[in-house]
Length: 417
Image 1 (cartoon, rainbow, N blue to C red):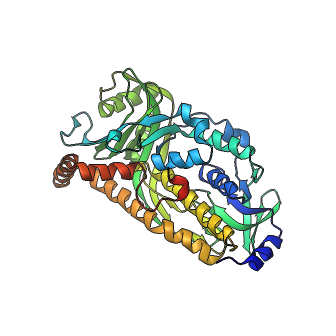
Image 2 (cartoon, rainbow, N blue to C red):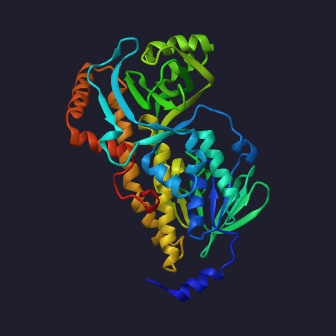
Image 3 (tube, rainbow, N blue to C red):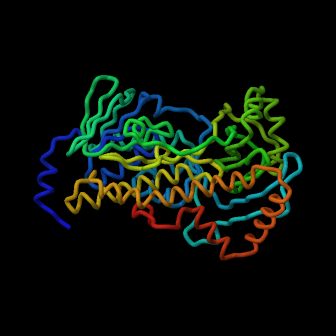
């Protein structure tokens, strides 16, 4: 597989960076850091000014980082920067019911003690992870950061790709990576279409303080309009992701804080004692959108630019980080063999690795949302009996726990122990 002559030709090409990454949120910087470990240089381009990205306050967003994602962050040197702000998820409880009536007696209970590897994952606020990634990039000489600038054009050549920025700068690289979200301009300019639909649901997101400790237990309470996730953060604080129909969510979002808490309490319940709002509230419309291809000529998509899904299983960022680990591994192995890291057959390996997994995950979250976000009595009885049956089957239950921890499937090296 080695081809020294070809390697010399590739090294002779002058590029600003090996990889041009559009999007400086979470997945883009993670890819730059992973590539740097293999000696590949990156330029990360983001529309927001760096101080805004680095010093962002709590905006309601927290992530359920699966164990595999925690391993990736540890291998990139990020985890040590954020561990003190992370909350281990020791148990997950999934139940079904209606607001004010409490959960059904049939529920799922996943305990981390049933697997040997440790906690299934950790909860971490967006602001802490974002800041750690920016600081890590600043300390890596192979990474350049370009903030407060956007792409206006991209052009592919036989040996590289060039991009034009709004500032007038022109950059060149060997491969262009779109990490620019669900409305990815990088994908659109490459002619990549998307498949998807809205759910008619909006997520109401906030942090909630409560009197009693949560003991590291995450709760997912399915109600007819949509699920309510109660996710543990450090201290007596939980993040809520509450999905309601668009019209209801708009009405609730417009309420003053005190009235908002009045409609939340019967849904939240009293199992954590008294509750009160901490900070501002946020809303996010929910939809499914998947790129019809994850690659094009000298281009790859990662994260929400490739696939945006319902947050029902909290797997959005985890899927993106698996993209990062897979693409970094594919390009690293190609570079070691003397291949062009952006050759069509190299990028095809990335797509083959990630396409089926993300399609399966998107379908699973879509079906789960449709199955639970209704009040059909037949479906209600079927899903309650199903949850009760799974709870009585240790082998199947353990499989679900390993899935939640991100330990199933063909794991990239950066996500292994």
